[in-house]
Length: 126
Image 1 (cartoon, rainbow, N blue to C red):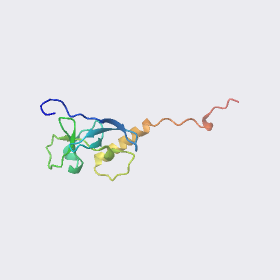
Image 2: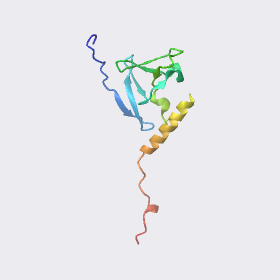
Image 3: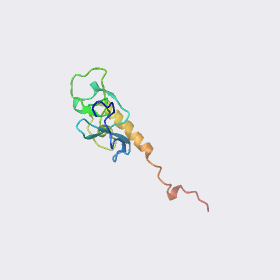
Image 4: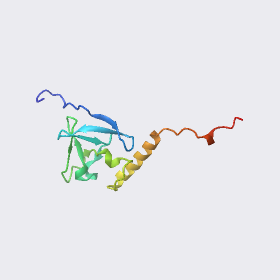
């Protein structure tokens, strides 16, 4: 669509629920015409993320892996949801990511429905 001024169509993008933790994740198109599931609403200073895990947002809405080091101190990037997923066992890659996983675990627990009351909790009506 050269010269049309329109963005690249993002068919199939949007938010999906993670099957592991139940939290939302953003499905975003990549430059390679593939999809990646990213942590929603999080833009991390790129210098805090190892090069092989940096996803940089492009002006058309797609993302690209950005492995350049060192990065500009103001550059922001996104990370894959699988790295922050509380439902998966992963090594502690970075201290702030471990904290994020803990926060996501708490959020996932708060989303779980209350269990139905058991017989022991019913009042004695006589």
